[in-house]
Image (cartoon, rainbow, N blue to C red; front, side, top):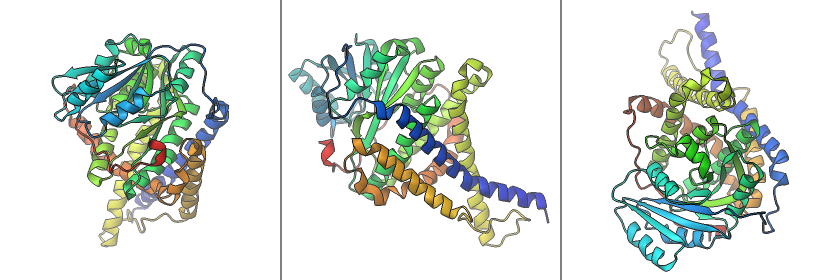
Length: 426
């Protein structure tokens, strides 16, 4: 009855299935460019990386109710293979034994300094406190459950010594919670999505975010941009944009490995991903004014990529609603969706998923020796990723619009998963 509605319906359906397909190839091509130009030329993993100088590094660990994992993290950090470092742990108003544990560990090792905050003021405030209380040239910021590879600092410092405009270097988080289905699937995520995406974005020019769980910063760059923003839900994304908009570069170093704990319950995973999605929405709203500035043009592609992803999420939701209405044979006047599964693109989508997973695992194989053991579970992650991305995005955007401007972003104890680790994490 309405031919233009039929055309719109078809366009909507094609966008829903072709957008993820196109992004997969963008990520794969970009990751290969990064590997060819940078990663394959990196210093070998089997040799100690000797630097021409060793600037002082402060390893900063913000803590909120981390008593379950804190001793392991501090012990791992103090054994780090770097000649000049100190560890600064910030107890951000914890209500468990975090403060007591930190005081005991600090009394046993003078390289550990502890800052106590009387109440929970948020991760950004904790990082800002550490940044102004150290004379270190570089700050390596990690989470309270993270285990660094022994040479992570050396491999990140290497980038700062090579280029004076490097403002930050982000590392390679690897999931160590692998005792449940959610944990195993997220192993695939950190390779096939996050690792691949960071390689591609770095190859094309700019990163959307430097991982908050492992990033080293040049303190002078932080000072120039005003340090971390206390009202942003994802402070790592915000500081990444602030640095790059001020024309500092952010590098990705895949050999700087950090073993992390991830949620292994649906509730914990939902809360984490919703916060990530809300943080991304905050970014595009806060920095929308950059479109009027030609000097900021190198940030435009990642802005467009996020907005396209957000548009896809609402398009996918609309497609699902139309499909449900079509199933019940309600009159839609040419706007019906006959099937939710892709048509001629089905084989291509499946093949692309396998290519993406295969390439991602191949690229990350030097840093995670047990990675291919998760292959069966990893191949399902592209489907899970786009589903989670759709659900969190459609919820996040209106919540960000309704959020009070300038409200302090405090944190709660996250879901750290089931404490079973692969041997590499020990």
